Length: 294
Image 1 (cartoon, helix red, strand yellow):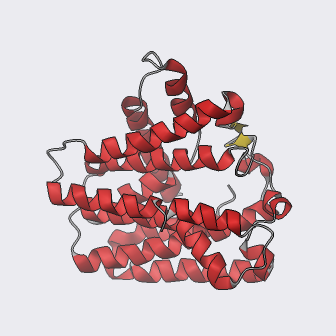
Image 2 (image 1 turned 60 degrees about the horizontal axis):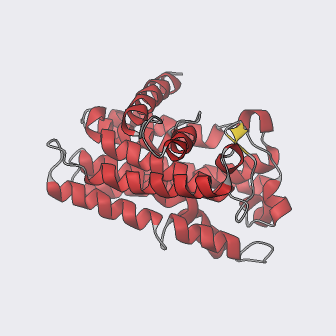
């Protein structure tokens, strides 16, 4: 319960920051800005910025110190969802219980809204900030760039598309999940550690936590697409099987997938045990990823 209260407090804060930093609809081009805000401010968990904030908090920093980086990560996540939902990729009509961006506006507007959110993310990451030294700022820009490029999110999406209706090995499935979903979550906690001034050993432990949580999150997502409640999820279930997507339940079955999910969560928790009581919220967050219903 304490975790849920804290996550809600941070979610409200992130939404306030995003509302402040996203372009106003009144500014030209109005339709583009409306589409950006529609997607970035859509109801959601804000898990990635929250993970960054909780990591910074664990290391003794104020959550406000990661404001721009946290919003940048959420803008990149929103960009990825807009493009993932497009007819050329997953052709989804619902996202977070609302029409997807290309349905609400149109396909060209959705593509450009995703592009603009991606550009805004790096504008936020590179903005002059007296509270962040230049070396740390450069480090997080490089971290984010790697997490979303061909060796990260975008590359993972390509592998996912290429693997549709194909018999793939477990190693390939893990690679897809790590890149498509895991690396942005890993990046979120690592950026939190960098901005909080974590030393190399602390950052390495936090990176391992993020790696395991990132894969666990996508494994849980695979499960929810099979056994989840569409009302809670805000989108249709069963779509992975219909599209021939490579998933853990498809390769291992539901029971073994649950075991793999639990194993990843245990590894994540083990990685940050040395932080002691300071890690309590991130440990609870790991359980949340395993037990989530949406």
